Amino acid sequence: MIRDERIPAEELRRIDAALRENWPTGEAVDFDEAVEFHESLPSVKRFADVLESATRPLLQPRAGVPRLEDQIALLEYLHSEGEADLLPTTIDSYTRDNEYGKAQEGLEAARESGEDTLNGFPAVNHGVDGCRELIEAVDAPIEVRHGTPDARLLAAITFAGGFQSFEGGPISYNIPYTKRHDLATTIEHWQFVDRLAGAYTERGVRINREPFGPLTGTLVPPSIAIAVMVLEGLLAATQGVRSLTLGYGQVGNVVQDVAALRALRSLGEEYLPNEVCVTTVFHEWMGGFPPDEARANGVIGLGGMTAAIARPDKVITKSPQEFQGVPTKEANAAGLRTTRQIIDMALEQDIDIDGIDEEQDLIERETRCLLEAVLEHGDGDVARGTIRAFDSGALDVPFAPSDSARGAVLPARDDDGRVRILEFAALAMSDEVKEIHAARLTQRAETEGREQSFRMVADDVDAISDGRLIGRPNGGDTRAD
Image (cartoon, rainbow, N blue to C red; front, top):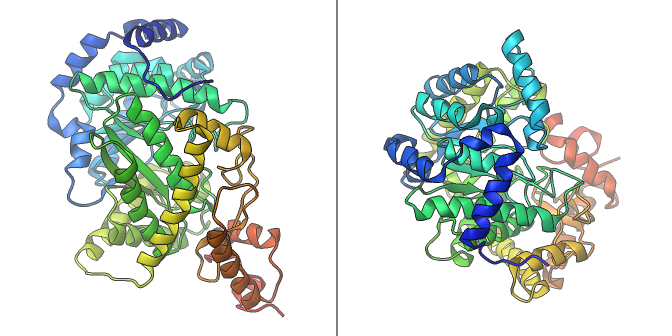
């Protein structure tokens, strides 16, 4: 079975050479020459340095279109009009599935028609030169955001192309994203990505790595998300990554979200090696959005206020057009400015909310249960323990499509809107934690005059898009007839 061990230099070179034969643009990758290119970049484009030296939460949207000139124009607009501090390059779905031939067809169609025939930027097809043209054209750090279970060739080309931050990980880009990739294989693939990032880091080019915190984005209990972040961070650190941004997706209750972000930073700094610089990123609401743009702005505003109180290093913003799919550049920029306005106003205030410390303590206790179970399953080896824990159900993610997870855990909100666990299945939690969750969900059921059931879960999934936080019966009345 795969182990949590650093890939030897010779093996890294062998895998790299074999991967680059999978698509013609791979031939242009030259590690030593790529290091020289990175060294030539000005300080404003060095992702880790900009992020780690920030004194307020930095804002970053999502954005990706197929044609190079359009991607440059889009990022320049979001930087100037949206006032984004950090910029993304969101990769198309064919590339995420390693279908580079189909991505090439889509790119050629986009060039001929002028239409966005792909839902992102096909970086592998643009190759090293295209990536460098993008990096050189925009005066801000840019990150690769994708969703690829096997991101090895994408990493090789984009690192050589000048990108200094790369999202994803073997758990967070498997369990929530795909059914057909087994966890052992994705861990092995991401060990290469992280080892390559580590190799650049050892040459003085610090590649920032960012595991995907929201996971399935649907009522994910904070402790599960944080445990996955710490595990992916540990796996990356083994391979030499020294800049890690651990993520968390908003659940909507301000107390719980602030507590979770503080727990994320605290546990990340505790579990990861001292030589790793830990930063955090807060994803604004990843679930369904209201179709009305005014209400959608309300959801964005709640995220901005939460970020101002918790003060993560980075915030991934949303637009008021989330319900419609891919937003216009104007809407994307508007979401950035809305978030910035709220954060900047709230940062000037001393906001103290009761209950955060108590909730943080509960989240940390839960997370330790999960992390200890993984280490026990692997006899101290994170890679083996992760695989075995998911197989046994000791670690699980709700609503996961992957065959590598049981998906048996069911979350629901309590009477205050905090995400609790209705069905633990085999999840490794102490009896004390289970009793706390059961008591708080019982309280909600009593308030609403109904039994605890999957109906409660389904109601909560749709609640925010319907204009509420908690999926109560009778349109939000506190007690059913």
